Length: 573
Picture 1 (cartoon, rainbow, N blue to C red):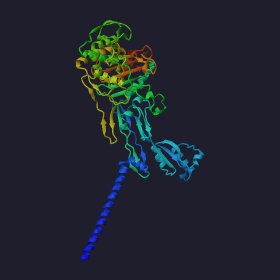
Picture 2: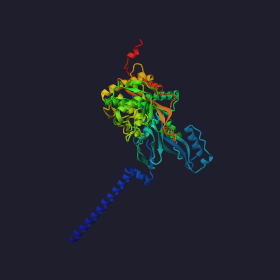
Picture 3: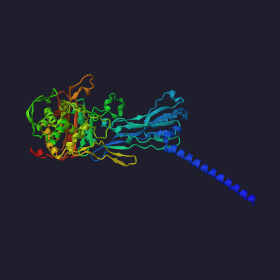
Picture 4: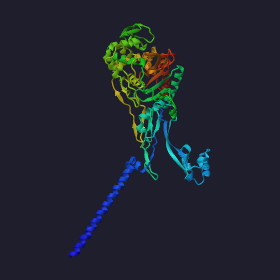
């Protein structure tokens, strides 16, 4: 009996030991399997080093512009291309296989005899399409293999080039990386995620980048570029820009620039300054700044349009003589006349009414001294440094008509839009929506940055004067049947902006602007035109203003905008 019990206990012990060993083995197997899963799936980046996996480069997201009906036009596309290699040692009959490859490719493969007889692979043809690759693979030749690469194509070449920017291949990341413009600003959305594969299987699929749909309207952009090119030639300017935005939303529907470049050949450009958009760079804008300070004086109750001063044609501040653009005095004039005729003495008088603190107050309220709120990269900070601590009277005087300070075109159109948008400052948007790889959409909604910058009383006071600018000075911007409001500006170029070393002060070359919106009774679109270094003697009312009229007339016809001054259309009948 005792022996039987002992045997049973021994047997039970053996079972327990075997069970324990089995459990340990299962746990170890599970741990190994989890480790492999972790390496292959969760930590593919680490696994690539240990197992020499290969990267699968994702397609970069596409970029589209649209038209008023929602039709899309591709302006940046990515697709796979393949380089074909031939490896003679794996060929059963080198000549026959090469002849067959040439037949399928419909080309003459002129190959050096040394390559054919070599023991190394060589490239046969670059940039094959997926269709060509598939046809060649059907031949089932062991002697050929392919190298995959990503192509970034800009089908419209120079179209919107400074805004789009470009993407180039980065060896370290293995991705196409955005370098400038929207390609850079939205790079995290566009670039996608790398995949991995071994010689036998795909470990992790690549994820294509998100697509962008811009607010840019194809037809408005194309027309703006054509009008700008014509203006640059007509006025013998070095370059320029046209910027068009919706008043209520801040959506940018056109941004034309000259000079520009073919995005497909960016690597052939020697002047790298072309890559940074003029929209990003600050400049001295001239008299387009005047309405901001006139509005401030009206808002503070310090003056009205009928207030007068004695215009001598010049004013002395801190020993500096500041003159009107034509060096002429007009005697006693109203502030309305001073703004409509763009008299520098009037702007200096307005500064003197405001004083330095109020002058700075309205720079801050209009956000003139802050980087524009916009989805765009490499924005230069506005420069109002000479108005600090506390700044000389002469500096404030010249700032009142847009000299000695600088801001970007994006700053200017965003701030000036406050007049058109009844006191509200809105964010500017190039991108309308982002379409994610899973087809979900991120919408770039309009955003109000600041409300009630000007009250209704002030707006109702300044608006008739801005309309009077077109009726009484910038007459070449007038459009029959439509009330247009805006302001001209011609600014001397400082030597510091002309890459001339060792010289201070200002040259005799100018930048001319016109910024305006329409219809003035219910503004829909705001347009900024700038021409850089036009022929000598030409000012904004003779260059930028008539250029504005051309793009405004196109907007009226394209969007079928109803006239707000229909009596002008019938007065001659």
